[in-house]
Amino acid sequence: MAVACLLLVGLASLTGCQDGSAAGDADKAAATAMSPEFAQLLGRDDGFALALLFGGDVQGNLKDCGCPKHPQGGLAWRMGYTDGLKKLAPDAAILQLDAGRLFATSIGYVQPYDRVRNEWMLRAYHEAGFTAANISYFDLQMLAELLHKSEVERKRQQFPFVGRLVSANVRPAKPDLTTPPPYIIETVTGKRLPKPLRFGITGVTMANPNPGAETLNFTIEDPAEALKRILPELRAKADFVVVMSYGPEAQTDKVTKVPGIDLVVVANNLGAMILQVQKVNDVSVVQAFSQTKLLGDLRFYYGADGQLNQMRLAMPSLDKVIPTDRRWEQMVMEAQKAIDDAMKAAVDTPPAESAGPPSRSAPPSTP
Image 1 (cartoon, rainbow, N blue to C red):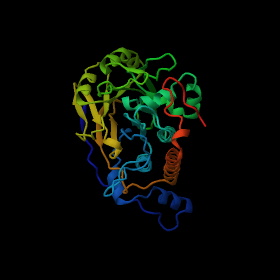
Image 2 (image 1 turned 90 degrees about the vertical axis):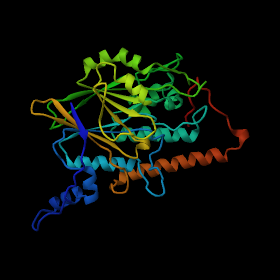
Image 3 (image 1 turned 45 degrees about the horizontal axis):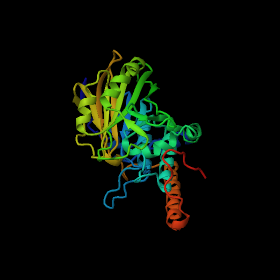
């Protein structure tokens, strides 16, 4: 399969209607207009059939990075880019993935304000229509709360995206926890796709590298061995298999040696070292950028014979060039207010009134 870095070719700015056009046409033109800078960022519609958008290491943060010189990342700009892509190529399909470290973490247990952060992440990803998120070893504290058997059905109703947190190698070490789904099968349709395509999506994580680190009620199986166990079943159900891998380069090498994988999306909080599609052991590999400051945009191209013949990658910066929708801006503001309120409540609570860390074998109390 030929792979190359996507060259971002500028688009001419879309203009309004000619004199005499209907008001509805004028509204449509205004809605699809975009700045030349944003058009250049999106690139041109060259017939791609599907765009797989990926990131990682957001750590419970819906806002941008807050960097003084160049703020990047965040839900509003990510969804602004997605909306622009839909306008650019309305006949192309889109998949959204998070390659790991979705949740904010604390040392020892989930702080109340971290829980608020994480619950807002689940709400946001569900409303944005994300397909799946990989579970990293950083996420296990929150995962124990979400998958406690006495609470799991209520949590899944409250936060449906819990059912899309996948892992092939994270397994409960205690009977009062349920197992996360090892994979998801997502059937994708689109006018440019040769047929409905079944994407099999799974994930693996490295173990905590800190000596003596707590397992937090879960065991982490060797990633390659876990994939060897589930890939035959997954491959039989899917036309295209994606593995999200949270871990270092050495893990990528081992994972790509497992038969049956088409694409590996790597995250490790180091930033994407190579901003293009690589071939590792004859498997296509792409790397997520730390905190999703750059968004992975992997575009799929199919030939007249209906076969995938090319993938091209762009890594656009999520920043002020991208217009944002009020819906996502409002969500980010509401989430931040809830987080600020939770942090203030924690600071204002006298030590004598603090109940201390919750038991890791019991479900959290819910207000």
